[in-house]
Length: 418
Image (tube, rainbow, N blue to C red; front, side, top):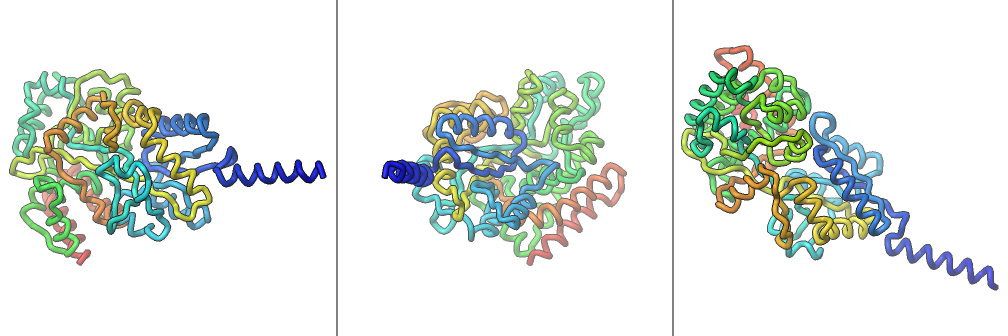
């Protein structure tokens, strides 16, 4: 009888632990930002120390790993992550059948940028991020260029020409550090730069350009102005970084003060900190149009979603709750990865210069939306990406018809969406 009681107690304990998400619980989190891999894993270790739950973080992004491919592979193998990332409507529509409705989670009322669809919340905002054209303020000051004047095509064309003529004086290799030609780097061109065609100069909720392009209707004047801007960036970028460089090559050129501008968002701050960068830096708007566009692109870049069929569903929800509400979570978001928090209860303020700059543009209300994710990943990566790569090669080869061919190919691509 005594043995029976012992066995019963052990069994009851095991059942209780399982029900509560006991020490053997493991959560698989698939995320898309290699640049915060170290910090997120450290935060996961903190969570494990606190709650005894292991969070296995797998980072898949940049030029080494395509998250969409990894996610499809995991799902096919029956190993769907408990938590993974979507970047917008197209990704939501692809995975909506396995997403848990997060509407009742406590953190929902603490944010304005959760991913919602049809009145329900499905995405936990990872942060607020932004990009314009990041600049080295010290080098601009040395060149006597006021960054406040950089807000349209003509202003950038004049500034780029002046800086290019001062390469030896400034000790730079190029005016701009930008990648896009190498495999896996089309997210710089066909995601982020592409967005300036979609939203520059428009009200934050203005989807007129998006909807027109999705219907196959192209505003020829706007596309031509955008093509001028892309061509200008390519002409003044480091040819090697532009055509074959990866993320690290792009960031290193800026960190080492070999380029005055970089076409990246404030997520590069951990890389700059690791490189002991001390120069002042901030964001200026893109010079997408002939008219002044006095704002930068700001949004929640992506969202954590939860697999509704997960065996660790409650554990996944608890981990996100810990990130949103705990002091450790707030410290991780602001101090460890230099992000601008998406939750109103976070009192910490970013200190990294580019994050501060994004916050200042937000406070001024001078922001444009991220609308690139209204287009599918396949269209951006496999249709637009090669068009930008071809344009890069043509610009570097100084082909006279490069820009017109880019315009023609983009037009054909959009018309194919109808």
